[in-house]
Image 1 (cartoon, rainbow, N blue to C red):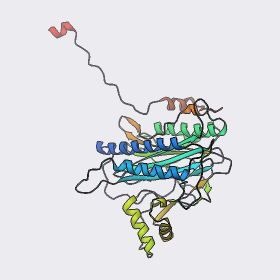
Image 2: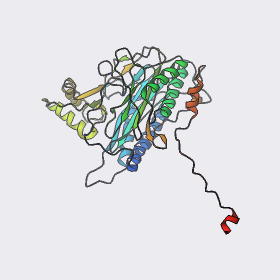
Image 3: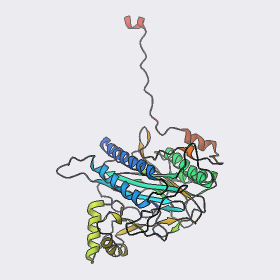
Image 4: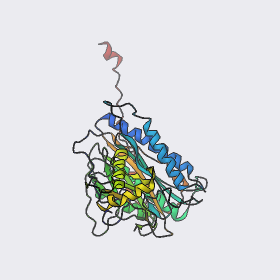
Length: 395
């Protein structure tokens, strides 16, 4: 939280970078196509990272290659200039790979000690990209070495299935006319079914053009003193549905790992130091309002030198690396959902196979099971035109 911890997109900060002019949203088919184009690239990047999560793999190398994949992929679509101006596109959320009890935002820099993935690690992958400011984010959890033939068991399986079922349920419940308290309630219910706990004060945010943390949000496990986030969902809205579940108490704390991901807040201040001005100017020109990693800058040293003044005056917001208690496990699933007239359209996925996990627990409520069994889309079947009887046709 902004006043407590920075958790995924769970900061209390509502984006002030949004333009005052309201851009057309999902009502415009072209914009739906841009969301889908970004989603295709994010899904492909996720597939690549999943394949690379093997024993001995470098977390930093996977993050670097995934970010490069998303950047290169977005440059290949919508390449034609509009009125002589290139359509902005690129990474919208730098790849983070957080292992076991690390909750989120671990994306090591070149100057940081690297982390090597081990067999049996519970790995969370979080990433996103955009086309013309239309953002698609994706998060997935796996256990290294687990397969349908050799599924993971125990607490790792419990927490993964809890997070997966939560995400699948709310992807069906976030629909026009519904409200956020019901979402908070079902996340708590499903997590409890698996003897797990949602990470406290995590938020799912509405997304709009150029805005990854929009005006509306859903809180998954509010603590005492947390302000209300009640909202009602409307047609043509877009949400990043982000679920983080823990085998522990759900209380995250700042890690000793260095923060590497930041984003602009929209605040204004005349920076005095040259390195600060260069950092802020490059962040603006390359990433606009999107989160970015210091790893993306040519000189990490100069970027770090300019960081302090930007943080002191509120121009940048950090995405701190957060941890649960050592020995606990945290699972995450995040998907981008478009609220369309014919039903929700879930455009990002890591292709999770529930058969890779075997838990002694399951969803208990019949009502919740019914929700999970429903289709996301509610397209109506076209009625076949009845043929006129031959005698009637002859009259």
